[in-house]
Length: 269
Image (cartoon, rainbow, N blue to C red; front, side, top):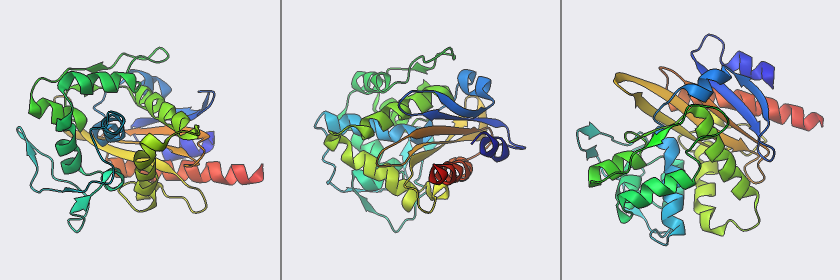
């Protein structure tokens, strides 16, 4: 798998880390120091944790459909969804699969600023290993709550912190009692099967994951993220791809090659 990681990141600025879900052992990596120290906005990779908290608190019905509204302006930012305009009514599963900004921006207003900030801290966006400590600001206005939920302002994490949060999510998926998060887990799998992270799809392997694209602090350029795990129904590995000056789609494409190598080597054993 190390060769696949090296090849995927060849000629690109960024980092990749692959971990064993159960043990948290790093199985393969490239530019691990960067993944441990660079603070980035997580963008849409935050959405599963936001909606998971609303579901757990009984503030969101996973089967309720909300309308995707365009244009979507939050404060000074325009954050129109990247999914097809043909998708207009979404439930929680759909919102994750299609990474709907509008759905999350509307749903998150059912939580207070302190509730949202605390939920993200509980999700694992805090110090792990020896990397730089990310930060979460407690939002006080509706605009700040929405931008935090979309990972666009008020939060910075390292790629390894993001990976740890998704590893914990994968551990929860392994558990026998995950009914409260079923829509989130389904949405992460559907994101790869037919949604915004389809570039990570691997024939014969169920992959779950989420893309994220966000602007850099004080920089108009974007960075790209993909975080996910496989096999989707019983996760064994989790990985993060971080690309400077990239998009989430680019990260998903690279992740797909690594998941494909995992599938190939797993068949041998």
